[in-house]
Image 1 (cartoon, each protein chain N blue to C red):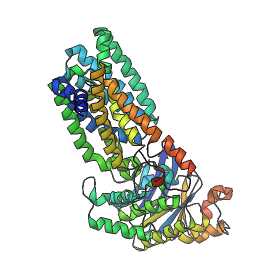
Image 2: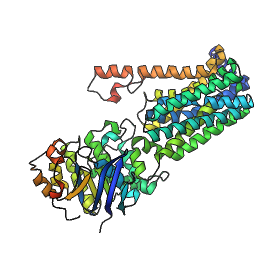
Image 3: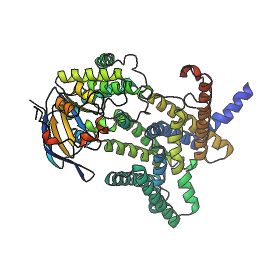
Image 4: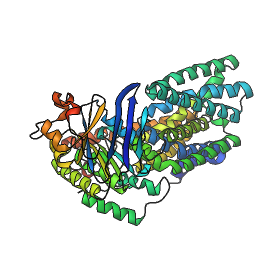
Length: 249
Length: 304
C-alpha cells in the first residue's frame, strides 16, 4: 500500500520543461533518496509533491493530507535574523492541530521537550535561532516536523553544512520516522550517506527519472567513500536504461 | 522644591490641562503609538523598512483626490488615501508575481507614479500651503472626527494584528512552511500591507503623510538596540513611540514648532542615543565587547 505515487508526471519551471514522464511509487515506511546533478529537477519535483507546483501533465497521487506533509528546506531559504527561539520554531509545528488561534497547552510543551531531548537540543529552548550552529538549527527544523507528526517528509540536502553528530541524529530520526510508517524523501549528494540511509533511489538525469536500488547505483558509481555526485561528470551521463529498475517501481 | 514642581507643571501638565486641542493631539498621538510601532517591527524584521516610506508617498494622490472632491474633509481624504495605498500595494504585488521581479522595484515604480499624480492633483486645485498641510500635518486639525478615526484605526489594527500574529511570525521565518500548510502567504501579506496603509492615513492628520511613517519605523529600529525578542521589540517600540509623541507634542507647544517633525525628531534622538549606547549592537557595546572578548553579553552590556 502506498500513499504517494507519480503518474507520467511532467513538470515545467519558468516555461522550461524540467522533468518528463516520471512515474513510480514511493513506498510507505521507506526512505527514498532523490539523486541528480544540480539543475536536474530535484527541488522542482519536491515542490510538485508538496502541491506547490501544478504539473504540466500527469499527476501526483498523494494520500497524505496537506498539513501532514513536511518540507525541510535548505537552511539558506530561512531568515535566520528573525528573533525566534528554538521553542517558538518547534511549537509552530503544532500548526495542523492548533492553527492560528489555539493556545499551546502543557502537553504540547511536554511533547516538545521530549523531542528536544531526542534531538540533543535540551537546554536550548530559549536560544534565538540566529545563535545556533548549523547542525543545531537543522535539528530544530527536524524537531518542527516531528511536532507536526509528518507522514510525508521531504528534505532538501539536510546534511549540508552540519556536523557529524547532527548527521547521526538526523539519520537515526529519519529511520525511526520511516519505521513508524512515514514516507521519507531525501535529496542527497553524498554517496556514503546514500548507502547508509536510502532504501530506494530515484535518479534524475536529463529530464528523466529512473528508480534504482541503492546498491546498483553505488556499484555503477564505483563509490568508495564520500564522493559527491554533483562533482562527478560520469554521474550525469549515466546510461539510464541500463540500470535495473528498483523493486518498488 | 515648590518652584521645581511649578516649572514641571508649566512644562508638562499645563499645556494639556489648559488646551483641548493639546489633549486631543495627545490622545491621537498615543493611539497611533499603540498601533503603528508593531507594524514597524514586522516591516523592519522582513527587511521592508523602506516600504513604509514608499506607501506614505503612495497614499498622496488619494488624499489629494479627496481634497479636490470634498475640500478639507477628513473622511474623504482618509478614504482616498486608503484606496490609493491599497491600489499601489496590490498593483506592486501583482506585477511582482506576474513578472518575477522583486516586489520593492515594482513598489518603487508605482509609488513614484502615485506621488507625481498626487502632487499634480494638489497643485491643480490648491495652493502650496495645502500641499504642506497634507505632507506635514497640523496639530490644530485634530477634531473629534479625526480622533474617532484614529482611535478606531488603532483598535482595529491591534485586533487584526492579534488575530494574524502567529501566521505573520511563521511567514516571516519560513513562508514555504505556511504554503505547505495550505495558507496563502500573499493573503497575510496583503492584510498586513492594508493595516499599514490604514495607519498611515490615520496618522496624516497629526503628523502628515510623510511623517506618519516615522512613528511606525523609528521606534521599531530603536527597540532593535535594546531587545532581541519579538515581544520585547514590540513592547519597547510602543513605549518609545508613546514617549516620543508626548515629548514631541510638548516641545512643539513650548517652542512653537510644527508637531509632526517634533514628534519624529524626539524619536530620532532616541534612535541615535540607542545606536550609541544600546544593549545590542550599539557602538558602545561593540567597543566594550572588543575590550573583553571572553565575557558574555549580559556582562558586557550595562545600559545606564
